[in-house]
Image (cartoon, rainbow, N blue to C red; front, side, top):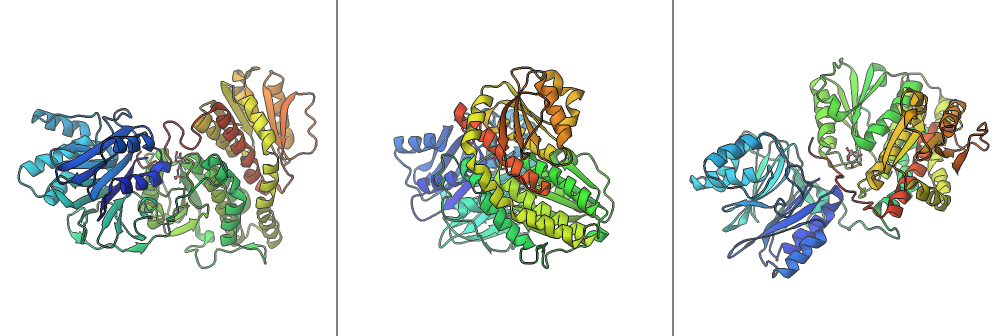
Length: 609
Ligand code: G6P
């Protein structure tokens, strides 16, 4: 989603802005732009598409030499992804970059139009530039103008605002969308996350909701939503200054899939005592699962599927009732939550707008708040009582892979912890399950040995119009995750179904053209899944069977391809079955030539609803 950078520096800033925008690319965007303060006024350069377009524009237009400026990567919401709609937007002296959605922009735009304002773009963001400019023209100072405008805006936003004629002033504001201040030596910065700021400084202040800030090179003044001066902590970010690279891989997604044995191992090491073969949350846990009567899990996208897997674990092992909901639904459906419940949100970025809203809803309704998050300095981390980090490292590919398996790792450990505390699991079972978890990295590596076969299978799937994924029990969410991966990066229509639900509708879609990926671990549901496979095979479907069973007696059903994975304790099957479905999607997309790491229309971090 949109990325923001602002720099009040001492050296020419144009390429520094672009460098930071490059670090924000992973969020997903479709146009980019910068505005740089020069003696003669502000130079604005924008381009549709990837940053390379913006770089060419900068080179071809005599590079700006000014030392203060703002930059933006835009993920279009209002108005198409064109150069005209790219940020920064301007009105008079005011140049603005915006992340979020101004919900009352239509009303505000109509008022401004009635007063004679002329709009250059179709965006909601331009309205804010005009409003600030309007306030300036009535004699307000930049800070008073911004304060008065902020109070009139509805929706979610983060802004960085530059004023032509004042190259030592930058104003930022946040409500809903994240924004951080970077503190440099005789320089100050604004950025939508610590990753953007990392090469500039590791001293960061995260603005709280409603805060706004006036920056000069030497000063930082923060105000809350009541325009009262406030002080906010300075923290030392752990965000890496290294530009994360693809290593020997062609895509970040391939690298991140391959990193899973390592990062699952690192995450596991945080939550288990391998010498004793038991989970160990140390002093972290602020509540006792004996006092928790219900668990409410909310998340979006891939993180939601991790939550769905966890439901099976918590219900089976800890006998704890679990509800899992998509955050965008949960936040508005006025779910009754009784005291003593635990709300668990799952988010790679820790910034997803709907997940954050769900967390806040649960807070208002007296729930204990826990979060499984990959970015420790994110808003969700900061607003949760208990933060259970995943140690996936920066995930750059838009389609989530390693964050998912790290989320599963934390959730599996938490479910075991809950079960032990509630007395629903004995020590021997805990030892067995922790032992199984410790074998996940090794088994994942074995699956990679068969990657070239999965590549061959993927080429057969690549031409399909529709692909169906079937799974049962704890692997039903893996079927949905497999389908999500395929549609995200290859743009092939795919659906994940509970295998038993097949005959209640989806079987009507089956013909010789439809590959069906059957996820069939050798567990207590294996025979039932194989029966469902036969039902689709009998109707001509091209079956791709993923299984850890040695022999599958399919009753004569013809299986196009079988992807064998190592036999392991069925507790860890979601960890292992998700790897071939990730690889299947990846290789299908590579074969089809799509933009694997930044698929069309998608964003890594969805900070608007
Ligand atoms: C976007 C990303 C997905 C991700 C989802 C939730 O849709 O493209 O990969 O699963 O957001 O993101 P979160 O950061 O909350 O896990």
